[in-house]
Image (cartoon, rainbow, N blue to C red; front, side, top):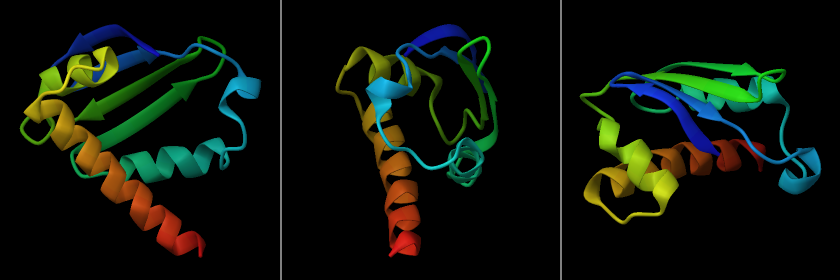
Length: 98
């Protein structure tokens, strides 16, 4: 995954790899709904033909630098906060699956 375009509040991610690389995943609509339920995220659009995903987010909740740091593997408070937010949403989803 790489950043294709980014302005504070909206990021477009270019998706790499194929379905065989990501293994078993829930249906795309379910993933999109869960991401949209994440604190600070207002909309998620996936374009499978373009292999991209656009995320609209609240830059007051998710610092714009968090995306760059997270994808670059750079440890920072912003990236840690974004990971924590995503982890909390993932854990809530997992709990509902049990």
